Length: 189
Image (cartoon, rainbow, N blue to C red; front, side, top):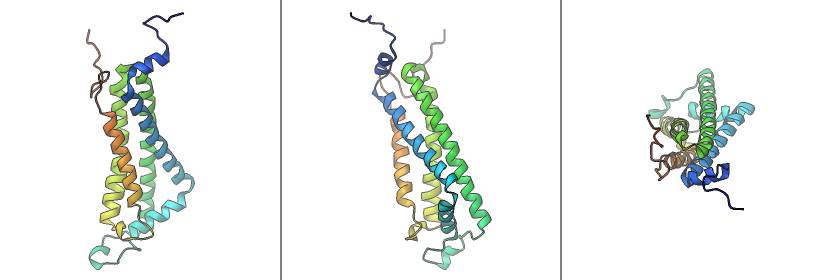
């Protein structure tokens, strides 16, 4: 028996949503899962990355250049406060990205929701870019000379995360016939 052209099956609505919203949903979920696992790992195995942050901030495995060592933070209280701040930021980013994932999933059925999903995803992805780009690559890598350390150098990992988050941010902002760059407009009637 043929189905009516105006069928309301969820699978049909999702298929009509187009590939870009599906890609945005999956990619946002991927980054959300990643950062949620990072935050969970830092909370449940606090000591491992606490040592990483302490060594980077103390600059105790760098070249010991007198022109740079004045930047070192040797107070364990400040080091630990920075680490707790990182964990809080990661946790908040995970929550924002999980929310964005739910919004993207809703947008697959209701294209009018794309703008909300895109906004939430943008906030979460920018949080990741700030943490890993400005925080780990900029401040850790350059200010605290993490690039000089053979043992406590997280630049490659941070670069991978920045690349992934940046790619997902671009994909979520690509326009399509179904969803222009700023999402479908609601009628003002």
